[in-house]
Length: 351
Image (cartoon, rainbow, N blue to C red; front, side, top):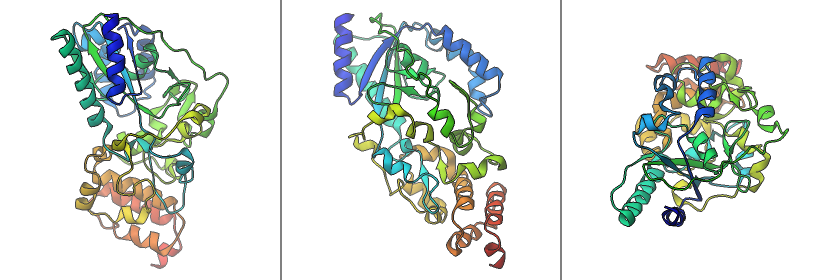
């Protein structure tokens, strides 16, 4: 098993993963934190978090026979962080979370994890396994922390001391009794940068995130209206939010990835808000093909941009763009457009 694990580490590198580690399946501490988080209703409308219950923290219930979890990391930062920071709260440009600018990471990582499994199978013969990439009840960050890939920071993202936090995680549940790695410990110290910078105060305490306040939740998971109390704070963030990562001191070590699949597509790393708002559904489908952005649908895409346009610099261009959707068939969108137009009075009233 030790020799096999050494080969797995080498194969992971060959397949484009930056790191891999192995953990056992004891996640009792993570289960306690999950139970408390759910009890405080911090998961909002993400009912699936509660529905799957302890399967998240008990891998052997999710995949019977699981003895070890191979956790892998793939870096995705598509450009220097300063480029992203320059876009925050820009008065005409959109900000999209950097993870969603390229190809959907689920597809990229699942394919490579399956390739890893096939290499293992070619070496030892058939074995039990299952691949996960943010697609099932898996406590991926707790698993990664236990396998030595990093520690869960105060913003609840995983941090590697050498490269920061701009990476995706994936898992291979297996019945192989591989040697395990040493768990990482926290190195956040007294730093509160992520807590201080969060636009909506979603990090309610160190290591505790109220998803109901988080811009990523509000613009992606939330299917209904965005609460008015958070709209101004959202600024120009139309899909997700990276503030807690952009200002984390550990990310001074982060470097842009050389992974072509995660390179920005269709200029979405520096796009004009009004232009994006005028995309019809067919154009949107074409521009988001193979992208994680697809998951929110065209209606919520427009809802998010309407909020951003409400926060944009007042101009005839912005008001004209908003008015094109004022009589849309979607009550959800119309409500957000009306809110945005009120933000641009009196020019909106004059038109």
